[in-house]
Image (tube, rainbow, N blue to C red; front, side, top):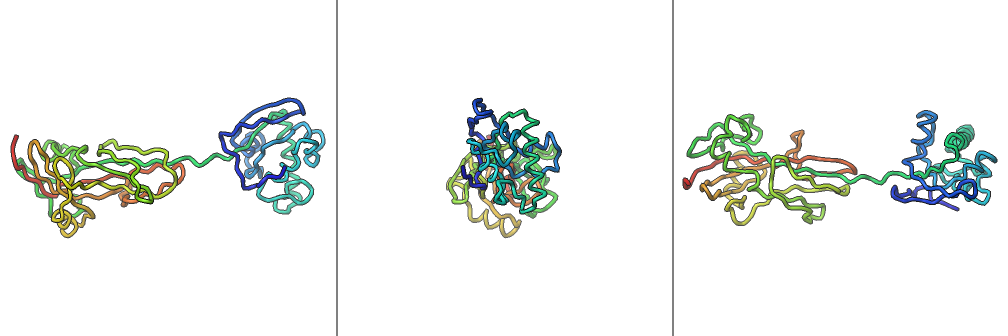
Amino acid sequence: MNMNISRTIPIFLIATILVFGTTVSMGISTSFAQSYEDSYGKDQKTSNLNLQKVNCNNIIKNGVDSADEGTGGGDMIKDMTNEGDDGTGRWSGNGDKKESNSINENIVNFCKNKNNKVVIVAEEEPQPGSLTVKKEIFGCENMDEIGANCQPLQNNSPDWISCDNPTISNNVFCQELSEDLFDIEVLDKQNNQILQFVGSQQGTTIHNLEPGIYTVNEIKHQSNEDQLGESEPDQRECNTFQNFPEGGNLVKQNPMIDYSICFEYEDEQGEDCTTNAIAAGEAKTCIVKNYISEAIIMEFP
């Protein structure tokens, strides 16, 4: 049986193996290397072995060269590594005969140690990634019962204060601007929407993401009633005067409050997270930060 050494065995595959010529056994293991490492130490060079089918009985009795006595084990052993074989059916180990003999001896010892138990080697499939998107709202000390004027502050100013901070958390402009008034979407590399959701402090996590590039976007609607709306004047002021990448307008309806909102996207390290490169098994967090640039109460309840 000829095997392509670059081929991996899916972790979910359950194979049926013939052991001792008559006994059928089934099993799953993460890797030959791990199994051998547990018994013989981490210095064994078995990390690339992909063992699909071995008749341990033949190996112990006759050695590695004769493992294919009607079982196909010899061909399989030749193909167990990326190094190929040296024409003898042994693992070549890049042509190092001493290393090759050592590895073949290790295989025999492995079979002896495991008492002919069948081990199926499988390289784990890449785990999916995840992206968590949170929402945080900021104001400033220059907010009273009638209006808020935080426009003099640049986006990197230390004078921005989280609306959760007791210093301003009781202010009407923070209290009335809840996170769920904002809609957020995550797009894939082709700008296809994966999910749309409302903002929240705890965040929304998207699981099972394949490795790739994902964009976080706070949606600006055509209407600004109880949602973030498009506004060229607010966009220009946020860009020009406060150095924010984005801006918009939101009119809260009860009580009626007109907000000028600047916003940006930052991860937990303070880096821009508009686009996120998600690797296999990686979990990332992006925070959409909204800043109350200006606000005024238009109608009291």
